Amino acid sequence: MKMEKYDIAIIGGGPAGIMAAIAASRTSHVILLEKNPSLGRKLLMTGGGRCNITNDKPIKQLLTFFNNKNFLKHSFYTFTNEDLFSLFDFGFIEEDDNRIFPETERSSDVLKGLTDKLENVVISYNFEVKTITEDFLINDSIKADKIIIATGGVTYPQTGCSIGNYSLTSQPITDIKYGLSPLVTEKDLSSIAGVTINDVVISYKKNKVRGNVLFSHKGLTGPGIINLSNEISEVISYNLLYEEPDLDLEIAIDLCPDFSREQLQDKFANDFQAKGKTHIKNYLKLFLVNSFIKYFLDEINLDGNLELSRINKKTKNRLIENLKRFTFEISGFNHDLSKVTIGGIDTSYINSKTMESTMTPGLYFAGEVLDLHGPTGGYNLKIAFSTGFLAGLSAGKK
Image (cartoon, rainbow, N blue to C red; front, side, top):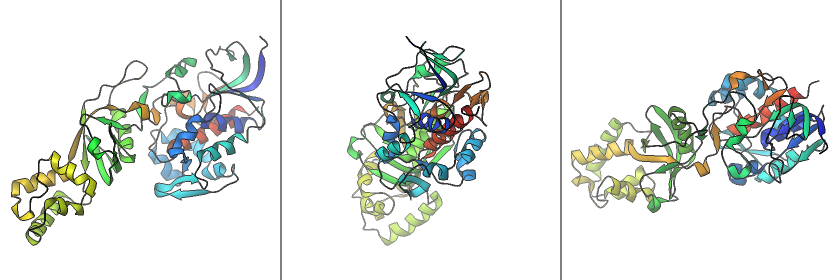
């Protein structure tokens, strides 16, 4: 077999790998190695197929949302959102919480815009990297002066992500965990599947997240839940390199976060007297979406046709307690829908100014393979694009 030689070999054709190839190919002879028959499979899935490409908060504020803001600082300032937008011949739209989408609302357009910039890059599809020698010989067939690893995490294995990718090098690895994952409940929620409750506060012990909750047949999802799943995953001891997590925990939802218990007591005291003939199921429309009320009342064992004037003090207090702390027993992560990986290549051994390993000169890392993650809302693609560009730029310097 004839051996091919390149200045830089990039392993992984996701957002980080593509961006690294774009940057490195400006100065170097680059090959991009992709396990799949096409690039950017996971990118196509982001934002429900619309591609929430980044988050447009000011960088200083944006950095506060990440687990390792000091490590990310240099890459974020090196490759900004403005730099990202300049790569495309179409515009972008901003939605709530500074989430940015292409104006075409198609992730396929984002992928095409990026791959169009790879004209000077050799791309090898269906190429699974199995071995990398100390002198950067890949699968005994490709020799590179430098290597960039952008193989992603463990989520969505159908996109080519694999836990085995962490063993390609001898770099230290932190615990690997599920991130941004829906939660599986003990109870069957099929009666309220598809119902969304908006702007509530969800908590696990001292960890709190404000956002929307969507009920599914398997449990709880929506931005609030998947962001809380990060908090849960980080405080629970497990490592996917060796074991699946065994969850048995309780989360609580504050269904009325803008009211304190005392304020609800005062309001109930006035309203129950002034609107005594009103049924509780109708009164609760002031606080809950109509499609959730029956489930809520059934769970706390309260007749929805009960008139306000007939509700005693003990029942009133129980009602308030459940509005402020409605609980669910959680039995697991819905790992099939987990969006990112928590953990990865330990950044303590990576130069944040270059993305180069401090253990192995010439070896670089970018994207989700690193121990870097943020909440939902464009934050994790921001990591991929900025670290990918910095890795490519650094490796491409002669």
